[in-house]
Image: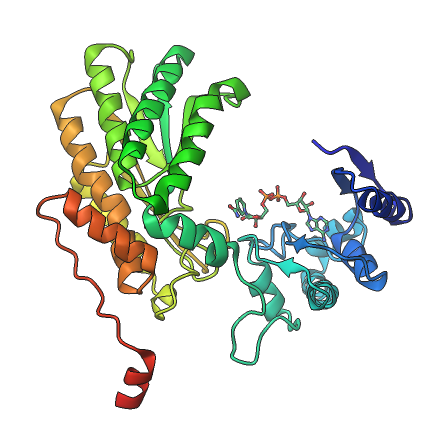
Length: 381
Ligand SMILES: NC(=O)c1ccc[n+]([C@@H]2O[C@H](COP(=O)([O-])OP(=O)(O)OC[C@H]3O[C@@H](n4cnc5c(N)ncnc54)[C@H](O)[C@@H]3O)[C@@H](O)[C@H]2O)c1
């Protein structure tokens, strides 16, 4: 929900400046081309704290990005009838957009890639988006936020669907998930307390938000321990009849292990292996014989065709002892194969997380990285 909708920048800018002066919080939307907005902000030297871009640049030539200077109708005609010219217009627009963003970041704005291939497509368009060392000028949100705070510890989007379609089952599952997370929190280490608190708050309130529009489904962020214990508790509840029908477990591809994407999910892996596409494949193969009901391996999720490999799974749990076994074996793998890889890349959160998993899980043995000073390696080779 936005407080104000504007179609004219002449109208929007003075209102925004007044709100800033009065220290009033207001959400405003501009219906128009975002490049016009960026250029106006830069030209008038208006301070922006935080910036990103959320156009669909994973699909730049077929309607994901509308170039500045063309109306919606002109764009649609050009992309169908003159695709090469349309491509040029998109790239020119990106060069202008980046030039304006660069002016604002030079004045203190923090800019980040939203996971929509903005940095990648801007670089391909020849925009001034690269540093001298060949890296992007700006980070992806996974590098600064999602990676070091969540994925490295195994926290990712764990989902379930109540196959009964009964809201009461979803309510029961929310309660069970809350109880499990609250129990885990009692003995959790300080580095993951914040994640647990956020998710306990979310799942307690989730029902009140009335977000369910179709399937009785829920999502929360949990690590390997959380996902496994929640799933086992669901299975127990199905066994006892507290939940009336089987539950289908799953997760998003935007997760710890299932996706190889140097421009998003694996962008905070800095040992060079972020450009390999093997983790997603290992992930689904491991899931497939550890108990998944189905797996999928696909291409393009989030950042576009050819830029990412995604692995996913679904697991039907029906209250049986087999389901208990599948949950223990498969969720352990589904989360920890990514943590192991992140730990080998020397991500500190993951080194701690995999150590903890080995203490918790008898028989699990993952080699730990030997940390060597880069200067020593550079001297040796
Ligand atoms: N970070 C994440 O977790 C995350 C999650 C979902 C999607 N994504 C990525 O974010 C992008 C956006 O996703 P979405 O679901 O919102 O897509 P969407 O296609 O529904 O929305 C993109 C919007 O951008 C508008 N747009 C395009 N060019 C514009 C321009 N020059 N000026 C103004 N508006 C313009 C389009 O009209 C459209 O309304 C996708 O690339 C997607 O892959 C990231």
